Length: 119
Image (cartoon, rainbow, N blue to C red; front, side, top):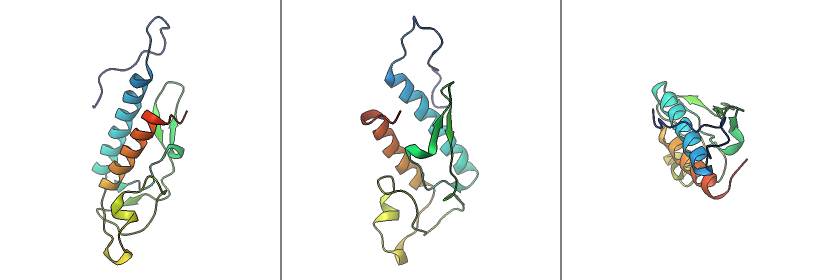
């Protein structure tokens, strides 16, 4: 959907860059987030610890312990450093958020993938 170019990891003569890998993995993450949003699910705890990468470089999203099937929520949950501002900085009585908090966390993951590789 987001990326038509799949890096070829099987041919050593074709060099696959770190950027190619990041683009490929992040496009997979975005596809997962679109699917979750279509199903009405918020993951609410996107972080490197909750992403697995297979030998064939396929991204797997795990740990749906904080996930919620809802349009909106007001619960404080997630991992500091990956929390969207509407979760972490608003008083409990005024807190109300939707699936867009996962997009914020994905942006934090993207930044970390670029500047602090986690594998």
